[in-house]
Image (cartoon, rainbow over all chains, first blue to last red):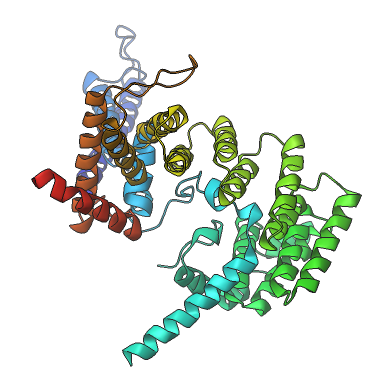
Length: 146
Length: 329
């Protein structure tokens, strides 16, 4: 998907550059023409007016660039609460990981989890005991395996 | 992959906590100890971010859990250097380190005394108040903890964390109506918390199971529980816990419906009446279907379905297996 968006954007940029170059060339040509051949009978060919094809090319290139950018955006985040919550439960971090494998900075998992873990009331002595038991248990298991 | 240091680590498994605390020396070495606040030196040193201090706090908690006192003390020192001794949160963390160090009850009494001294100076120090309650609970003095918590909630009635702790305390004592009330207060403060809806449903289910006889209160609890689980699913697509509870409750209602031929009339207009048997059956079927879908897709390791907890999936499998012989008959 990204290569499509990149090609489209690149094409748009090339077109835009081409349109700019044509506009510059056209104005220089107009000014040199108007200074060398003074023709008071034709005042309408002022250097400010560009030919229609250059204007059209500019507009078209800008539209193409916008389209390319729009194609390249990352998937949109859900705006419905239940969909977003479901994403957290079903996929966890995976849903909030970008193409580089980094978890989005504002991802916190279930933000209401702290109501059940309650970090303000943490019972550190029980946690330590449980951890020590886990270590002991793991060691026993390893001994059994040996 | 090690879990992020930016989230409180208390729910992590022991192995994840160990992983975090083993990273501690590296994290401590790579992060700056102090951040200068004079403008000239701050031009040359690293920029201060709130993440840094959050990281230290969470690292401190993990290290305390795994018994790595040296790193824990280092984290604490840096936090004290930055925020000062009189910062309320730092005071609570210091107390936490002392609690973890305490080897016998005398030490704990001393820490408790210190908390009480701090609170005598400033009775609105919330982190220390919470620490004191947690310590009382840890020491097994539940009635005192409940009294202190109720006092805290008197002047801070909008803190869902404290209400949730109160609910847990009541639940540990088997006081179901009080626990349900406290959880309802949590939902007033956080009405979109899908896990708390499921939690309330679970507590109501437990309360109904504890009654035993089929009477009006029993039916009211079951109806409320059904409602809560349904709400949690409404708030969160494919919520395993919600569907699990929904299946449990609807199965119970369906098995009970044979026992009580007479419909119990609701005494209060506000009471939620049990839906008709047809609806309950449909809900049960939907929950079974969804649970088996979740289990199937998780076991097949399908993309976008890997976020569930392994043990929760195992429990759901067991529940479905209990059901299987009945459906094949």
